[in-house]
Amino acid sequence: MTEKLHTSYEELVAHKLMDTVALNSKFSIGVISHNDELKRRIDEGVLGRFFNEFAALYRGIYAGEPWNEYLICTNDDCGKKTGLPTEASLEKTDEEFNANPEKNCCPDCKSPMKLFYEPTNIEQNFVRVFKEKIFASLLFSHNDISTEMQMAGFSLGWETTVHDGYKDKMIIGAGDLGKQVLTYDEYFSEFREHLGKTHTEHTPVFNSAELAIAQKARDARASYPLLNAVYTRGQQNLAVYPGQEIPVIGHTLSGSKAEAIFKKVGFTTGMQKPGSEEVRVYSTLPRLIAGTQKYISTK
Image (cartoon, rainbow, N blue to C red; front, side):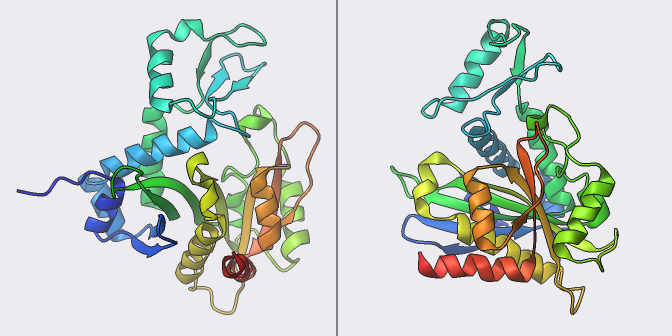
């Protein structure tokens, strides 16, 4: 009889899809990347627990401050977001919302509210992108009661191009209520200003897409190791472009802790247009690997 796997950590390790390293006595980091074996295992349906836990972690983190992406107003002209209180249970709050969705009205315009991330949809989206292009570093913590490893944070990235990076959650964000932050020409000009005039629309780039850690694990000082791991894996897989420093693009909320971290490790920030919550960030993989390693060494 096949042994039942209880956690996403056990799933990934058992199927040899994740390299792991201990961060300290309480936390470990795992690194996975898209390849034929990962695609095969996803198609076989053996990573269901991982995607379920990852989607719940993602929703739980972004439902809190500073994003407040738990509910959003169904009135597109309003777009009010409301978050989840720090100590609230995502699972219990979901149950309460689903039991009485009509009771959740927008505090501004009184229109109905809906879940910012619908659980099934976002889980299916992660299945798709992990098959296509994801590099991921995952933070795991020991459960307080048992020795089980629980997912507590992540950093995501993937290979794209300067042209396609414009559409990779780079310009349009829910925080901007669908408004365009930059035209493509403005974006391309800003990219070349930060990373060099020799780049074309077809230059390969690495999209540093996500960095998020659950509240309970933020004392682990894992931001720099998570970023270093995903940048290093990106550099290893994008080494098919010899002699070229791979540019990195990303975006973050202006004034956020993530923006401060990005600046410390080697990103420069683009312009912030009035009415937008987001700023674009630019760097290169070698610069970011060196920058994150410096802070790992001093922490």
